[in-house]
Length: 347
Length: 256
Image (tube, rainbow over all chains, first blue to last red; front, side, top):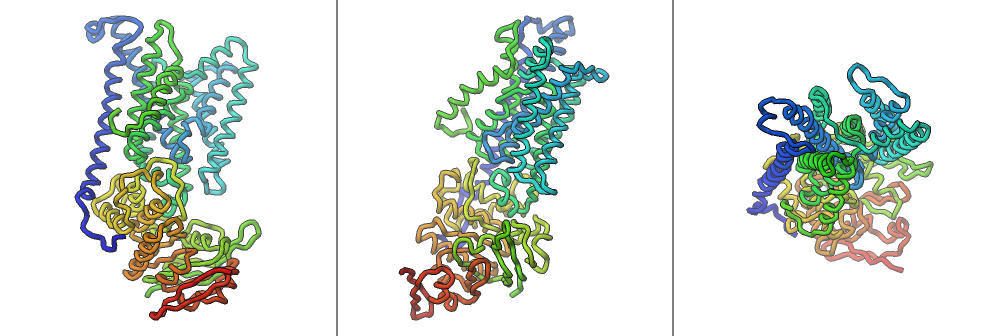
């Protein structure tokens, strides 16, 4: 037991520098991965196109590259990054490494909205598809409902949040099953297709408002990274370090649900990204959310966009549901990661 | 010495069962107080109320003349640190990252300043935790973990440190070492309040012992006055022999 403070050792002096270096390297690698997917994924597809013609603006090559493939890749990047971010956040809030963006019901709410729109044949609002609007509203309703149930007065704990979220999730899933049961054949097919999740080419205006909603929320989540560190250890732990736990819990739930709900409204539920990416990164980078969150965003983006590229090209012209690809690619990789003992930044 | 914590008639009950009844105590800076008592006597509850983590108590508990419940959490955390009995860790934080979390109330940026790292360095030196600073907290032994969470509380540089059984899992050397550190912190001006089951360590290092029994203060005095056979029997229901060393310190044998 040392009694004096002593002079800081050399290794200690370099500790903050090492932390920052690690942060930069991890961020650079994951951002490079996302950038690589952004540049390469639009170049492959079921149709062969002439890139000279595409960049010269000649039809149809130009339209295929810039109106079909690129927006789809961009949507996958934003959606994947957002799902991974929400996954990290919910895992920290619930102190459960198996939590996903879907654990707390908001995505089932979105799905229920979409399924109701399919069954009741709701019409599009202006040029916004009815499915998106209904899914968005469903997610919002569930968010408010869970908040109302989970908060006792103005207090909220991870326990009440988990109970409220999981019960609402179950109720929504039951309602979806019921609607599917009473639906006719055509509707039933549409419902199944929605529930599989999938990325479609969207217009740039859609992409713009979608990113405009989701990315600021993701940024807000990043900026609270130190608070999520405290919450990931425990509520008393966080409270003893100056955090007002209930408020932070509500903030986290609203931000994460907003992100997950918005993504689900546009793409349907896509499994695995929000679970496997945070897990894999935590094994390599540790649990510090200041490193984990931005890396999860970029890695999730790269993973979903790459998976979607496989989904639309592997059995072209038939498309595989992207959720199938994320599970088939991610599952074995994850098992390999669990089995391998090496712990380094590089895989 | 200025009064930091002032408790007047503090009580709390859980589902109709009183856990604390009419507790009135004052704690000053530069004081090392040990709280002893049998399981369920209300020791941890009392500490939780003082740390502002347990609501629903009656009476008043003030820190620097303001009710603990009315303190801004952040301002309070800059002055008072709380050390839980144990921490159940779900994620792979390193020992150093756990200690760094103690700096949260002092810095508002995304990253710690050199001053923060210095505080961490000192706290880890003091608790002998530097050798495993980079290790996963979950891979540490019970005693090592306890020293790491103590380092986290020390790194918070509080003026009052509340500890719930800080030495339960420690080996002999580190038990003594931690108590020495706590006594030294008190000498430097910190208020240190530790809940403990080790009467001999409390008697050796603390300047004041508070015995809780069934939610009430059974004794509150200097160690040599509290650690008396009748009182120990009354509080714990255990026979004890008390011996005194030449320099006036007490040590006890418990048994039949």
